[in-house]
Image (cartoon, rainbow, N blue to C red):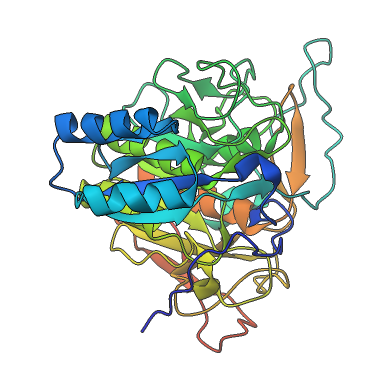
Length: 378
């Protein structure tokens, strides 16, 4: 049985190497909450409740209408509890928390970047080879939604669809560009083009869509991540993959419910297990349990379990996650470590595979004693 630990505003930052972490609540999130309504709540009723928040001098932020019903709000908890007594439509209230993209390990590649730097000759990263090589998906309907720091839409090795993207961080609403680098790296592993330059992804040339939930500093909120999942639920098609190389310590019922709801519609979610050398059951959304949600651990080029990777019964597969070469924000390539780098391999695999659960061996030295199978495509 999976154990659930409620997310605390005082959870410690314990992720590293390309994942996210919950950090101590800052003053910026004082009185910030996530209000989840009963699934049967109508849009008009939800609007009525939101209006009551405004009358009580609260501020409604993100609105959720597809994956879950509800909204984020800034309002004293005493006032919110009073609202809950008046409106039985309110199912529960969660404290909003800060999440951050932590520093990533790995070695920069010599390829460099920038428009004035000649593009390097194409390399096939070892991880792409390990999961079955690449398949050219240029011109196909294959789509990957990257819920992350955005994607560098000007990178010549990526086919980015900004039109269907969204930004749930502070700043310009339609700015989905990546000022951090994490999301661009993830996108390249999934779908870098087979064009003779830089690198090639597993589903080469597939469309990648930026769902920006973290800002240029790699900082965001749980309420923003849920808004990103809600956007995917509203706009993705069955068979699309959504990559979530992010997470936090503890358990968010709201995020867990949103992901499961979207997965019910046939959208595949790939989630980084986390980089704390700990049991993934203690992290969200790594602990989310659904037939279309896959939690991914990391291994190195020798097939050994990465020392930093989380493990446990909530992990379904292992994928390459050490010294992973991929696209770099600003152009060129860079190599990073992390379960953040492992998850997008499987996102690519499912876009090109007729059998998404095909495997080729298992990871060695898995600390939980149950070696994770290695997913590949046919």
